[in-house]
Length: 397
Image 1 (cartoon, rainbow, N blue to C red):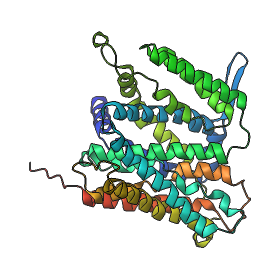
Image 2: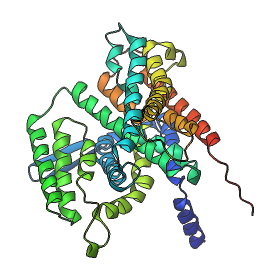
Image 3: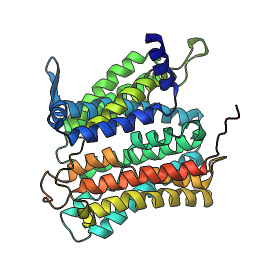
Image 4: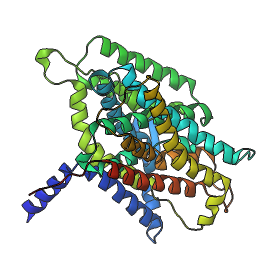
C-alpha cells in the first residue's frame, strides 16, 4: 500500500501541471478557511510572530511577512536564474528577443494604469490605487498556463515569464518610488556594498555557491531594512551567479541552483504563498460595489488594460522590426498569454495594502472585489483562449 501511494505521489509530481494544481488548490483552501468558522485559526497562523536574532541583528515579523518577504525572495531568485540563463543562451539572447517581453511589460503597465486613472480621475482618495492593476502575479499566471501541460510551447512560457518578471520589477520600482514613505539610506548604501561584493565574486571567477548565498542573505536583510520590497534582492543575487564553469568543473553554479530549487519552489513555496495571501474575508462585501470607480477601475485595468496593452505592444514591436516574433507560436496564443498577465491577485493585493489604510475607503467600497474579479476573469478567459489556440494532442493507443 505504501509503495502504491509513494508511486502515485511521484507520478503526480512529475506532471507539468502539478504545480499549478497545487497553487489553485491552496487558493481555494485559503478562501474557504478565511470565510468559515475556522477563520480565527487561519488568521492566527498568519499573525504568528516569528523572530530570528544573530547577535545584534534582529528580524521579527509575523509569519505572513516571512512568507512574502522571505520565501518569495527565493522564488524571485529562481526566476532570476532562469531569466539570466535565457538571456545568455536561451530564447532571450539578443536585443530583439529581449525587446518582445520588455515591450509587452511596458504596455501591460501603461494601459492598465491609464484605464484606472480615466475611471478615477478627480477622486483624491481612489487615485492613490493607480498602480494596483499594473502588477502581474507570476505564480498564478504560470500556474494557470502549467495546467495546459506539455501542449504549451516552451517559448510561450518563456515569454510569459519574461513579461511577468519585467512587469513585477517595474511594480517593485513603483512601490519603492511612490509607496515607500520611510527609506533607510544607510540600509540602501549597505545593500549597494553587498552588490559590489557580488560583482567582485563574479568577476574573480568564484564558482563556489556558498559565498554568493551568504552575501545574498546579507543583501536580503539590507533591502528588507531599507524599506524596499525585499524580493528584489532575489533577482539581484541571481544575476551574479555564474552560468558557466571551466570544462573540468562540471555543471555550472546557476544550473545546479536552478535544479535544486525548482521542486521546493513549485511544490512548497508557491502553494504556501497562495495559501497565506488568498484568504480574503468576503463578509460584508457586496458585488454591487464593483460599479464604484475604484474596484471597477482595478477590474477593467487588469482584465482589459492588461490584455490590450501586452498584446498591442508585442504586436507593434514585431511589426516595427524592434522585436523578433516567436517561432511556431500563433498570435492567438500570444493573446491568451496577454490575458493571463491580467492576473494581478497577490501582487495587486500587496500594492493595495500600501495604497490604502484599513477602513479608509469606508464600508461601501472594497478594492479587493476589483482585484478578485479582474484576476479571475483573466485566469478563466486566458486559459480558454490558449487552450483553443493550441494543437490537440491525440492518443491513438
